Image (cartoon, rainbow, N blue to C red; front, side):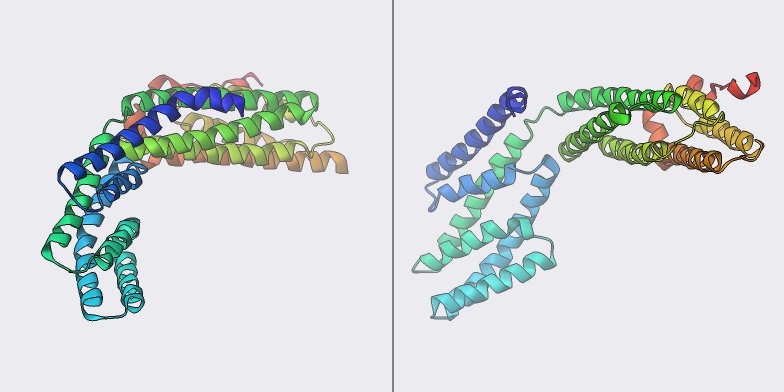
Amino acid sequence: MLTKIKNGWKHWVIYAARLALASSLSIYAADLMKLQFSTQAGVICLFSMLTTKKDTLKLSVARFLSFGVTFVAAWITFHHISSQWVAFGIYIFVTVVFSEMYGWGAALSANVVAGCHFLSVENFTTDIIINEFYIVLTGMTFAIIFNFFRNTDRVKDELVKDIEEVQKKMQDVLDEMAEYLHTQGDDNDVWPLLDDLMNYLEKCIMRASEYEGNSFENDARYYVKYFQMRRSQCMILINLHEELTKIRYIPKQCKIIIEYIHYLRAFVTEMNVPDQQIENLNKVFERMRKEKLPATREEFESRAVLFHVLMDLQDFLNTKKRFIDSGAAGHIRVSGNEKKSKWDYLKRK
């Protein structure tokens, strides 16, 4: 908890200061314009700034489009129905239906407050309609202006560092798995690494999603897809290690799998296309099929587990392959050296 506070306090202070300044300036501007219910401009600004740049623009459009529905619904109900509680109920019903129908749910709170303002005035005049419109306009204007003060370049630099850190953590996991298979030792060294990797990936996905919402660059979606791909691979590694823990007898075929895992860890990089690694893994499958049949039940069970491990490794590589095939290669500018690198373990045999 203390570490979280120490690492995040600057971000929280800046974020809170930006929200406070934008909201207070919205109210100040509304006061200068001599608008009624001026504090509502600050509330609208605050609610809108809790979203990303893209969401703020979408929300702005929704607020202005839904304002027409708000006005019409309020005029029909409040002007023609004498009972306030009946009129307000009908107004809420109509507003919610249109908000859900056209995807304006995020603008519903401001519309309800505007309805309360319409209900509270004695005369439903043009002035009060214009007043509410300017309140919405003022709050959204300051929200848009201050939301565009986000430093997306800094976030992008952090995402690049996150990619490198994820690769390192995943390589460490593969190293520990190979070591566990070599010694059939204590798997307590592997599970913490897997937990740490999964938790880190969840944070990366959140940061990448925030960057996507605040960036208008063409590659903004790439980082979300990349970390989602790595999360899928991490889940495969979790399944793989669960298979490893089932081995009670270490057959000689383990050696080639250990060698392959050591070979594979060097290619857990952003730019690698796993074509060569998939090809080499197919050779391992072929080599395993040519081995003599197991002589004992224990050896049979261990060989079956090894086969499942190979299938998990295949899923691991195919996950990255599908990511590349989805169009990611255009962003990462695939390294030709990594793509063509060979594995000569089988040849040495």
